[in-house]
View 1 (cartoon, rainbow, N blue to C red):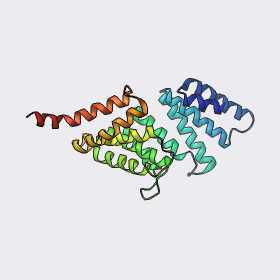
View 2: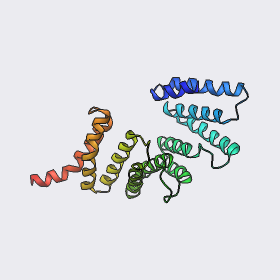
View 3: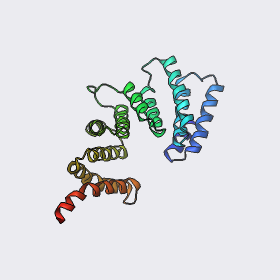
View 4: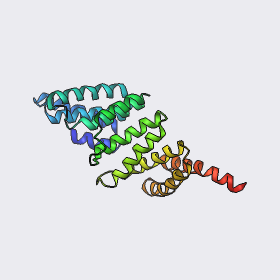
Length: 224
């Protein structure tokens, strides 16, 4: 059931992912393994499916309960710590509380001097988004630049995430009024995005729109 939950999640069928994750958790509890790592993994799958179904209050409740159980059973540095911080920060942002999202990320974020990791990169990306939502554009650009630089050295960082980080870096630069570097970055990102997800994808359209807006002042100067 846990495997089926993961498969349905990858397929985007989050309703079925939630059904199987709950069944996995129930079976683990029935067999006396309700306090083990497999049960906490099943709880994580439940929380993640709730989040993907946009059931944010329920997802936050499940995440907070899992964090408390994991810390109680496995100590403060348990292996769910960083992924849970990322998920809870995303939920907080979706609920319109970027300050809470920032606080959750900063609490779990590895020091900047540490070697980049997958979880650390994802946390910094969520931090950048929370800073953008607070109109702290220079700090957001710094966060996304750290992710873009670090992701080149971390095997396994997904191309979809890497492209989103570069787009968000361009967005932060644009919102600072740094139009030329934003447009230059988007000139590289847009063709890569198109090859990855297709020209009609929503993210490609948004990236093209931002690129066009960044070029507009230059076009106006040329016409004059």
